[in-house]
Length: 196
Image (cartoon, rainbow, N blue to C red):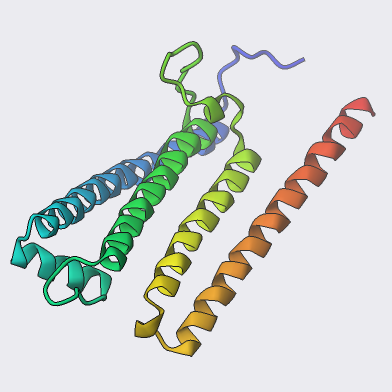
């Protein structure tokens, strides 16, 4: 029987400690999250400025979404495209949090958040398989927002681009369904292995 308190031999200990090499990657993703927060506020301030009649802010908004304002005014379509862009940033930010927190907890070290009032609900049962399914569904959500933005602004895209984006979105959907199906198969076979 294995003794849990027995120290690891040098080579297994080195291999096991190598998981900490992922720490700079997660810290880098936190910095990327900071960039997204900054980008969100810049876009939001430009939208508010454009709504208040600021010409420079309106030019920035129109340039960002690629949809012209009506006679120098903010149109409903332009507002919708900016808001969808903000939602897109939030969804990508959520994806980053899932990767940072879930990945660190799964692959690097326990955070011991049990009983913490702010512990995310999904983190209580996270593992590599659950994380893959959650990431796949988050990517589908992000892809859906991009596709909706493209269709709202369809006159500025070629038919080839519209078909390509639709095809990519369908590929994401099929991939997520395949991941979820494989995860379901694996979870059904796990109790059988434990019985034998």
